[in-house]
Length: 476
Ligand SMILES: [Zn+2]
Image 1 (cartoon, rainbow, N blue to C red):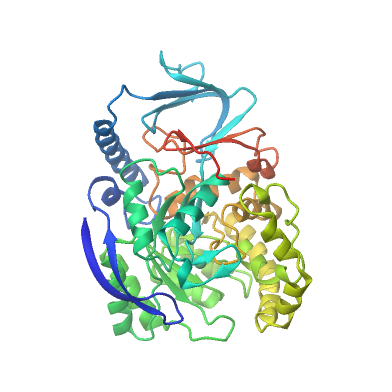
Image 2 (image 1 turned 180 degrees about the vertical axis):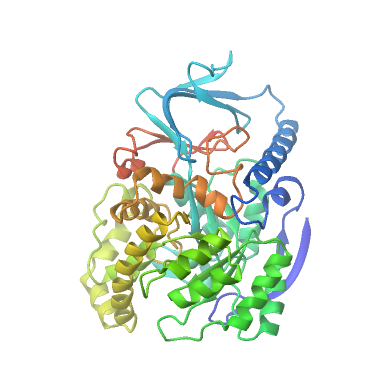
């Protein structure tokens, strides 16, 4: 274990705390998977490295399991692999939490003595991967630094898992408690969603300050670097180009992928041209144009629409449509629904300065939906993200609504599923470990009662959730 002492801003608001960040061991799998390459360019090599590293870690795990190998075979179900393929009658074999075989029932048999799980009439898909979420200092609808505790972060990761979101990339505000949880999941299946971390988001006003801030984040050993290049609709300062270029350079040198929070097409194009790996919100001011598409493709960059983030900015001035949805109550209480339905709360929101901003984001959402279809048609890799974590952005539940909005915006159910599994992992360099049902990957699996290729809302039909081959029982 490495201990790194840092003084860092807790958030953009300048709440500074001295912390002792415990950073996990950086050997084997975590190092092999923390690749800074654009996806596809070296996919095969990276996937091979990931497989080797996972095999290594499975070997390490074996040492900690005294009994005979635990083998589970999922038999005779539809298998959606997360990379765009379907096996109608498939078998998936899992040994000690890692997938060891996948194929049609005719060619892959359940090993003798395996624990057999009959999937007749059901669908197996990879656990959902959220490429843009957050672990937040939030409890229910309340926010405050006192909520940034280990127990509360575990609760949030269990909320994600309750909805079948088995991996989340937390894009900012990540502190020592989150780094400790990440270190633990490298040792054993976590019994909650896996989390990968940006550490604190980087924002600076000069190249020099950006270099210092970025190096401080890199010292925490994050999985990626996140920057904010946004003026919040003209209400705050934008990170200047010289500053974000300095951060990009440091991220490159550290072999970390860089994700950019932004709003405007001009910023998105400049960032893509400069080599940013990942645009982590929709372009919301204008329809994307050929210059943007060309820059993204040249760079093999990824794009996360975060449509539900926009919805959360305007939907709460009246009762949102999901307060009576039983699926919402899979993870959230009736009390939260009652709060969301409270007319006094609606009145407060309508009178707040944020309300007018919400109306602008509402208009931006329509631009975003058109852009999602354009970007997808152009062949740019989409990674499902929601920006869940802040109050009113419900971890786990929103991911299903996001998938539904993506399909309503013109993607096929298969495209939406790939964006929320294999491509979400690939976009942050974790392919081979999570996001696909493939030999060598963690057995993070969802058993669905209904086929999501028929209707994307069937991702809600969660019969069982497995994380690292272990069944996850939801807390509610
Ligand atoms: Zn975010």
